[in-house]
Amino acid sequence: MNSPAAGFTPLRDRPAYRRLAEHFDNVSGLSLRELFDQDPARGQRLALEFEDIYFDYSKQRVTDETLDLLVALAEESGLSARISAMFGGEHINVTEDRAVLHVALRAPTSEVIDFDGHDVVPEVHEVLNRMGGFADRLRSGEWTGHTGQRISNVVNIGIGGSDLGPVMAYEALKHYSQRDLTFRFVSNVDGTDFVEKTRDLDPAQTLFVISSKTFTTLETMTNARTARDWLLAGLGTPEGDVSPVAKHFVAVSTNAEKVSEFGIDTENMFGFWDWVGGRYSMDSAIGLSTMLAIGPDGFGQLLAGFHSVDEHFRTAALRQNIPALMGLLTVWYTDFFGSQTQAVLPYDQYLNRFPASLQQLPMESNGKSVSLDGKRVDYGTGPVYWGEPGTNGQHSFYQLIHQGTLTIPADFIGFLHTLNPVGQHHDLLTANVFAQTEALAFGKTADQVRAEGVEDSLVPFKVFEGNHPTSTFLVGQLTPYTLGQLVGLYEHSVFTQGVIWSVDSFDQWGVELGKVLAQRVIPELQSEQPPALAHDSSTNTLIRRYRAAQGRS
Ligand code: F6P
Image 1 (tube, helix red, strand yellow):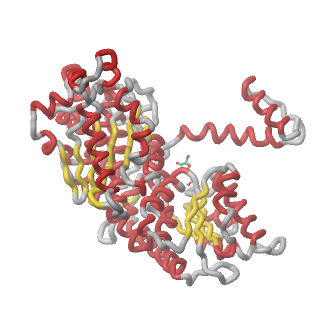
Image 2: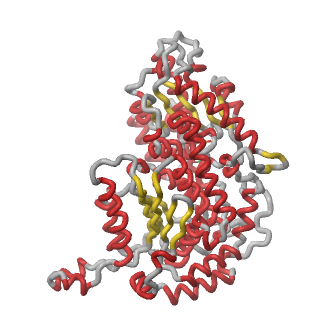
């Protein structure tokens, strides 16, 4: 392991952090009403525009001094140096001794990105070109299945980063997809997922994309084997003949050996590299299903959107840097207000999987309680990210955001133009974005409630305290390009948070223990003979009950 501890000052000892703590005592009582009254231009001033993205953070509970101090904290925490280190291919994932170069996945051929002494951009484009060639053949019908029929169904099998980004991108970009192709995504090891997603598919017309960085993940490999059996049985292939696999399975992985062991020709494998973390991989070959859906040009636009935000993050001054500010605001609420969650509320039905996909990114990255020096942190780190597309959430959990006791910072994402201009829908949808952020910020006072003629006993129930912080992203239109930008913004926001918290945002040791214990429990559930159980009394009893239900006592 590298020496990660070199030269970093614990968060609470950084001068800007101390000043922020004092400053918080002075400003935490300020209301957004007061802040807007004091500065009528606040709504224009605290906003940034980057290409087609307008980022309004004026409804955040910050003053100019807060922002200065947060930026000072970022500087003292070495954010600019960490950005350079990431783009420079340094092994900033210290606990796994790996570089973190997802930015290279979207670099144009004109750029050079160095990793351990060589430029990785040409190999990235070599894979992109191979993916493009395959996508063209499949989309045109030139690539056929084993029986010569055209492929009309694509089933991605993967989990975590090998599933969430691809599902989200497919849903988000459905408008741009080739509609005569059906896409399905199988992730859960629960057999129901596979059965339900394939029950109406014809094996002769189905292609499986097995997406797994390691090609060892239990869920994915189990589903992949089931898919192979389903295909061979469905095609009526004689026992022992696996020849149909060649035309119906492709792999996306870093592990050629395991791909080959599974029986997929490595000619039909699209590779990537260990410097791409699973949750940062939707723009690597893991995005093959996305490319099959929207075509190589559309995928190129997605990458260009990511790249534009990479350049913004790398070059913009921190005070004008949207992802840096997003990350700093999260730190502000987490460490000073004690917020434990962050809502992401996209007002576009196509983004229905955006919050779910986003959860892995910050929570696997910054869900850490040990800083780079191996010591337990004495401050809050990664909040819970969650959300639903608007306006559905308004009729569900918004009550708690408006009148509950928690401070829940929320990102609202709206679009100037809809892809489906039907009747008045888009005006109504967008009115709700603006109305909700206004209501959350300014609420309704007791006097206002009384003035509406509400009887005194009911007034407390109808008061909205307001002062709930939000950011609003107002984006031109949902396109592959702007989707890449939006995801890129969150990626770099998460990076910024991790730098301030001095955690390794690129490992995920927390997922290991459960995996290891499951490997121990599996034979205990399946063995013919009663196993000698040495777990705690709760786990032992659960295992016995399950075995009994299967008739294996
Ligand atoms: O859950 C842990 C994890 O390693 C994620 O980080 C990753 O996205 C997922 O598992 C899937 O891993 P793989 O692509 O290797 O199958």
